[in-house]
Length: 258
Image 1 (cartoon, rainbow, N blue to C red):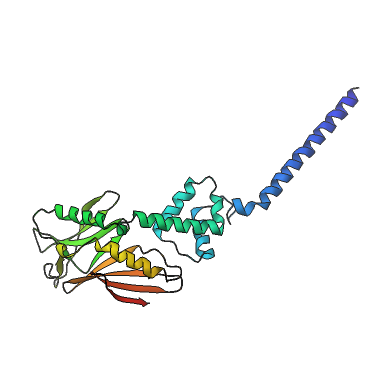
Image 2 (cartoon, rainbow, N blue to C red):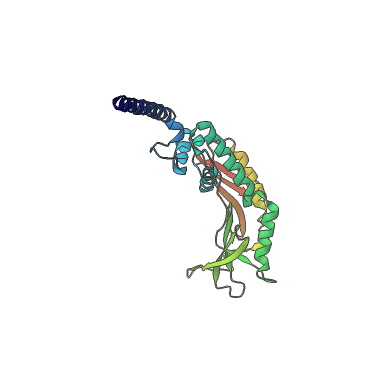
């Protein structure tokens, strides 16, 4: 009787082992079959960098830093980030990133740009402000320029506007050369309309439609020369890059392949 019980116990353990082995084999086969949908090339859970790489190679599209930040946030919030290894999902990501960035950028709102310019003038009530140098740099969420000190016109300082703080801040002093003449080498801020950027951005978007793989323009420059100014932008494409210059009134001066 004892021998029979021991034999039955051995058979039970053997049967259980076969069952577990079968489940394990099935699970292993399943995971190996769908491994590409779940894991990245490294064999680990996918990372944002891997999605960036696939977008560049499979969609022939170079992401801007703003697009990478947006996509990273989407992947982090997703319960199934592996979905974005699929080419159609990558294209969807690109479209959504571009739309979100355009909507929230400083370029898209002339009224907001007017408010930003007004904030700068309000820092120096009743003083004429003059912009020194050759450029004002407009970015999606930041503006950079150099101002002649209205109280000491021999000095020039950099000022930054940051959208996350919605404020202007005085940054580092500008190192001048002996030949620099701040008052002569500057233009009155009142002669410049920041809101023109929204119109220029519209021109950039129209031109980008005809450029294969056109990237989002991250910078628009205002170039000052001989008391006048015009707008400049570089449009990067998959096959060629283009230089764009536009008069402050909106007429295109230059649009050429580099």
